[in-house]
Amino acid sequence: MNASMRVLIADDEPLIREGIRESVDWQVLNMEVAAEAEDGEEALELAVKHAIDLLLVDLNMPIMNGLTLIKQIRSHLPKCKIVIITGHDEFTYAQEAVRLHVSDYILKPVNPAQLTSVLEKVRHEWEDVSQQEEFVKVATTQIAKNIDILREQLFFDLIARKWSEEEAVQQFQLLGFPLRCPEQIGIIQCVEYSANKDFLPEQDREALSNSLKSLILHVLERYEKLLLQDDSGLILLLLWDSLPEERILSMEKRAKADVNLTLHSCFEPIGEGVASIPEAYSKCKLAIQQESAISPVVRRARAYMVEHFSDPDLTLEKAAESLQVSSVYLSRTFKKELGISFVSYITKLRIKKASLLLVSTDLSILEIAEQVGYDTQHYFSTAFKKEVGVSPNQYRKNLK
Image (cartoon, rainbow, N blue to C red; front, top):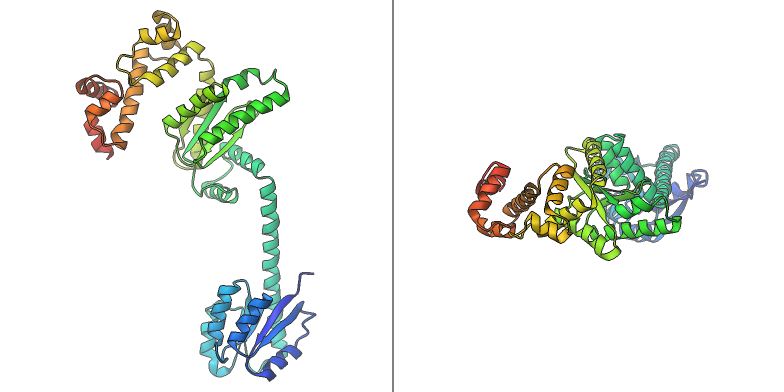
C-alpha cells in the first residue's frame, strides 16, 4: 500500500474541524490528519512543516483568507491536493478558488457521505500521480544506467529511418540532446586502427580506440554531439552545430602530432529534418571508402596543399620537392586518384577560403586575395568569378 496521505484541516470553527475529523474513517481511506489550523497563517505554517498532501480549507478564515492561503500553498507545495469548504453564500467565491486548480469543493454543512466520496476521488488522483512519478523515477534511473547504449541505438535508428521528426525530437529530449534536428553528420577513420585492428591484442585495440575518442572529444568539447564507434572502428558523429573546416583540419593535425594517428574524415550537412540523415550518412560512408583507396603520396600532397594554399609561390614542383617525388609522377597520380588537377585543387581551396572570408569578415577584396594566395586583386577576382559565377563583390553583396 502507498504511504498515507497527510491531511490538514483548516477552518476557524472548531465544530466544523471536529465534524470533519470524526465523520471520516481516515485509515480506510489511507489518510491521516497531520494537523488542524484555525486561521490561514497557521495553516500555511503547519502545511509546510508537515509537507501535507491534502488541504481541506474553509475560504472564509481570519488573518489569511482561504484564497490567499491556496495561492501560498500552490507556491510552497505545488503537488498538494486542495478541497475547499464553503457556505452557500460564498459560492461565487468558491468558483474563483476552482480556477486555482483545486480538486473539488464541499458545501456546508458537510455531508459525511459526500465528504468521503470526494476524499476517495482525491486519493485515487494522488495515487495515480504518485505511481506515474515512481514510474518516471525508475525509467530515468534505467536511462541513466544505459545512456551510452541508448544513444548509440538512437544513431542507428535514425540511419534506419525509424523515427518521424516528432518522435526523433522526443528521443533527443529523453537522451539529453537539443530539441531540434542535428546540423551535420560525420565519419572519422583512423588509418592505423583500421589497418591493424584484426592483429592487435584486445587491450591494445581498446587503448588505441580510447586515445582516438578522447582526442576527438577534446577537440569538439564545446560542440553538442553524439559520438560512437561502430564495429569496423569508424567514429560516427552527429553534431547539432556544424564544424568549421578549420576545426576539422585542426583535429586531424592534432591526432598526428599528439598520438601519431592518421585520420580521414568526412562531414556532410543534414538537410531538412531527420529524414535526410540517412542520405548524408551514405555520402560520408562513400567518401571514407573512396578516401581509403587514395595512395599515401596523394594524401600527403593534399595535406601539404591545405597547409600552404595561402602561399602565392605554391607550385606543383614545390610540393613534389617537399614530398620527395617527381612533379610528373605527382601530377599524374593526383589527377588519376582525385579526378582533378593539382592546380584546380589549389584554386578550389583558395576560393572556398575566400568565400568564407567574404561573408564572415569586413576585409577588403585585396586583403582577402592576399590571404588566400593571390598576388593581385584582378587575378583573384578573375579566378573567383570563373569558379563561383559572380565577382567577389557581388558574392558578398548577395549573401549579406
